[in-house]
Length: 233
Picture 1 (cartoon, rainbow, N blue to C red):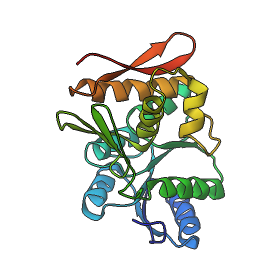
Picture 2: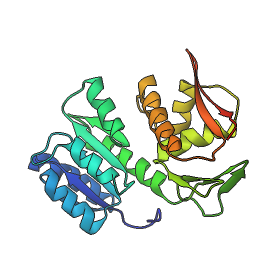
Picture 3: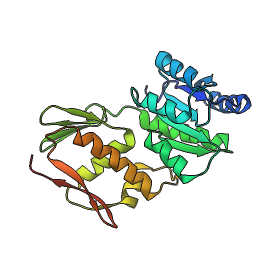
Picture 4: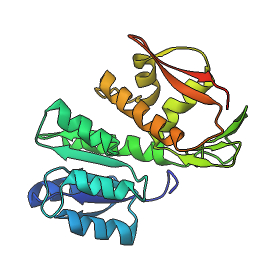
């Protein structure tokens, strides 16, 4: 999808009035919108029609929003906004843990939700293929949100993970505070805490640990943040 194309959005919400309200606001912006009322129907729709963005309520029949998010993330990096009536921090962190890109608590302003949709769709616009960086024993591919090791292993990341990794690699040896990482990855002034960054770092490490030949590792600096250091292969 390019920024000028009409995005397909799936709203997964069992409260019909709310789903229709969100749909109406999105359609006014020119988006193509479909509605699913339960988790299983949502998964079937995603597999068949491949939406450009998913708005997913965490409390839906059939499968929870968390389960749907996990299943979608197994095969797709489509942007996902999760909706919830619960405001507990642990619930929000769980959403990010399973791959959500943003989190909106009910009740919410439909206009604010539309604004978040626009931000995520803009971020999802492909970066020109020429934006590739080769350094040492790895190659960063911005258009694919991936890194290729000298052994030709390609590792894929979410957009936020790729931003964090790119920043750490760009200043190898330099310590980046959690606030610097948050500012670099979330430019829409959302509320993000330190534990969210820690969660992203944990997932990046897990992906990198699965391959060899990168020649660097992400290190924690107690009380400050993170840095990237060269290591012997």
